[in-house]
Image (cartoon, rainbow, N blue to C red; front, side):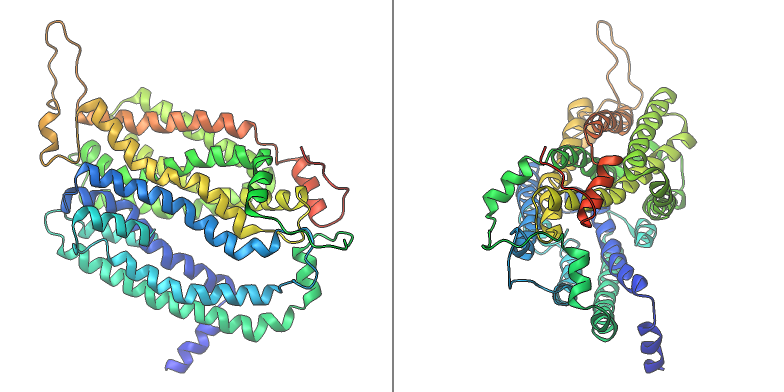
Length: 468
């Protein structure tokens, strides 16, 4: 029976096995994003100073770790010519699969460190953020989430982590076995280099690129700069939606919808982006990624304005908006990886690299955009406190908030309630993000004929593009 199961698993399509790795990351990552702020604030009672210190340190580490590992991985590819230093793709793939098989289970174990109090809240918050960062997990998590009785949620997270550890180990072993038996036999050195390298006339001497020179090259890469400006806002908005989803449900809809409806909204908001992307990808093939992303920005702006005009009392419209706001925002985040691959090609062509430094460029994008993950909870809690007086770090945060039925006193204006503050936060954040993104995206020129020219030069079929 066991051998038959292994045989069935081995014959699964490679895409399914690779996709399962993303599943085992997502089931942990989504639960983490949704509950870590509420857990440390409401359950562990972290103070404001410790929260801000933890988020600040996390901002620095989270921004630096991707470009650091990207530099260690791809620095050998930065030189325009490196005779005798060529690395075959089979070796690179096997090296990264081995790293995944070791680090995947460790990632799952580090996830557990959030849900058991084992140190001072400030210290635990700092250490957990710097160690770790399936949509079906979100559906189930809302049913067991209870700030007053945390035991059931802890058991749920243990089961989730165990499932992820087993899945990571099995899927990476299957990928390595599949690659070693089938992939290496099919890949020869010439086909690999044809895919990865742009052919250039040989030069007599090797020219190595230092980190400072690479950063200088990036500073002249106009499309890269406009892209990371736009993507920083996108990362901020994605994590703002995840961090404040429970708050919006609690203060805008909790007394008007059932627990099962809240669980359904949560689950849909995490599953729908994956399903939507199947449709978005078909649109990208027809109209191009640039046009689809721009359309999603306009859609975000239009939906937010409609919700603002409708007001917070339209319950069904509010449910649709809260879910759709997150669906389209997450969908946009997933499409932006396609743009980064285009930037990798443009970087290769503009700087005449022998091989694309893809991991390093993805790391540099993360260096600039990942601070948005930290800005989301910090700016969100600050705005809520400034506008309504609601401080989530106080033991009785509602004591400073005006009543749900505010009264108009003589000579004073009507003070906003917590519900009104949550509503304005819900609609004005996406409006502001959409306007800033539409401006920065309009400056991005890597689309249309320019993108076609870059792709052609990438394959060595067109004249070189001059540095702009």
